[in-house]
Image 1 (cartoon, rainbow, N blue to C red):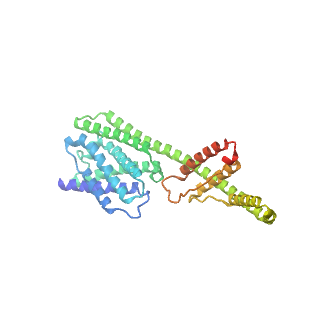
Image 2 (image 1 turned 120 degrees about the vertical axis):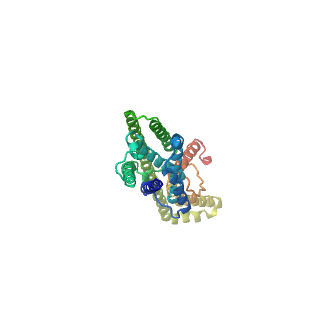
Image 3 (image 1 turned 45 degrees about the vertical axis):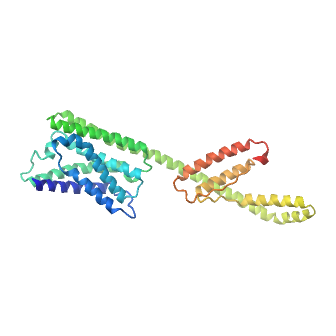
Length: 356
């Protein structure tokens, strides 16, 4: 009997570990994985596959969910290159899916088959291997369908909303598992347990799929809007550069005239200096091109500089964004765009143009 238990533990451990690898194979790997975390993940998950005592079912449901989540979390943290909140979400997501799938085998009929009460084969070892094969042949396709529908590799920008929904679904599945355990302990074999379990299972996966579909659509719209704004900023930057080039060509064409005018004003030094200052300012305005270290922001600032110049508003820029990588480009542009637009609008209300 002990050999049978050990063999069952080994089979379940290998199969569930394979499911973890396959479910998250699409996520990018770390350049330098942390093997000790991966080893710890495997050690932690082993107790999941040992049979629990009769009085440990209800108290152990949450514990087993937590152990599986922690194990997957450590594996992802060790091997995959994703943000911490992403790893937390994926760990809970996998545990939720596995709990929902295993709840199927706590329904009347399947529960007796899974714990070996009904022998399909005379040889106990062969019977146990067959039961485990049937169990994971059912779990595997369900996980694969969920994987296809939610597309883990395409899940980006995971926020509190996803985690909140996942926690809620996990609580429901844990409650269902406790209820099914109680039915088994008290000898309930009603068909309502089957219907209840299947409805909860389908509802859980439906909510997961619809949630990911909703958030993916939202993110697709955001990316499309970001791409449109980026093209707009780049277009404005090109127009600003073209205007600058045109001014430079105009200055070069008229340079002889400007030099002649400066020489003619040699008898009036004040007017000569004023003329030179105006010409210098015009040249600087025509040749200035923002260089912040962020091309998208450069395009936006070029657009805002031209708008300010058209409204006789002076702008001084001192911006270095080369090491700023914790803010998305579009968020950065939104911040600067709103601030500069407010400044230009306020300055344009000043009647004296020299004070703008």
